Length: 211
Image 1 (tube, one colour):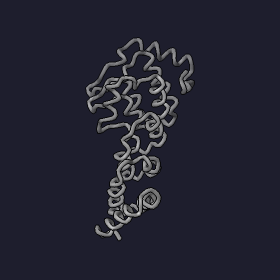
Image 2 (cartoon, helix red, strand yellow):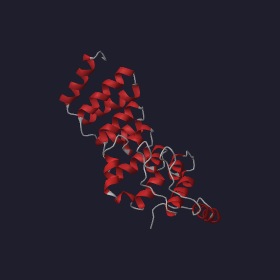
Image 3 (spheres, one colour):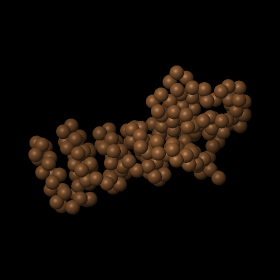
């Protein structure tokens, strides 16, 4: 049983849309390589349940969710960019990621979903991706700091593997005068690094004139 409820569309409307979808090629690509499903996922809607219901309807009507556009994006990427956590849960529930090649592409790509989620500051989507095993923690943390999406950064910092990530972001935040990021990073240094590493980080700041 799916963990996501789908009831935002009235039964009559669902049936009418299914009949409509049956009359055209639901996987036809435009000059940008995008299918109707790409555009549904690109649509910005405050009521995510509407979008998720339509995504489900497209998939049940034969929409191919493995088609990539000219930017090498699946419809899934646009759902992540818009913060559609319910749509992501649905894709997980139907076991879309069982395709290991797709999983590999998503993990080892410049458009890794974890990076997209933190770039746009979607903590809800970030949490879903982390639960599913996406683990590009350090790069995603850097993006979160650079974008000042500190709720995402706070979620990620304890997962980061490399202390130099914090040093790099400490210098970056100091150089642009980002006080909120600096406070977060100083707390990380205080609570999660051994004294020797703390001293090295602070010395590095002074060396660069950020005393």
